[in-house]
Length: 103
Image 1 (cartoon, rainbow, N blue to C red):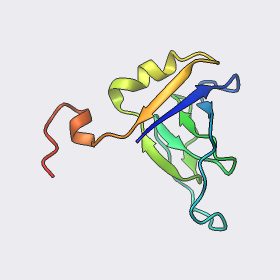
Image 2: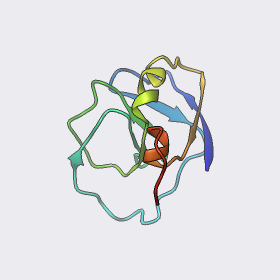
Image 3: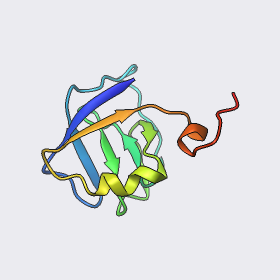
């Protein structure tokens, strides 16, 4: 799956807010418990516009996490400016790390 988004001017060190076709919730009435957050996590708030958490991210978060930016790409994400296009694609963790998937 490949998706293309645009970084908004509401992006900062806490997170890069993306604009594009909103993602929809499978179960919109369900609440998620707060859990630990990590740099590079891609959270989806109720408006359906993803946020990639940055170095000053909150300690916890309660929005669904649909993925995590690989370590190799987190510094590139930090260089994205408002208005620039961002393309996300899914990969297996071991392939992203440069080793065979093995599954």
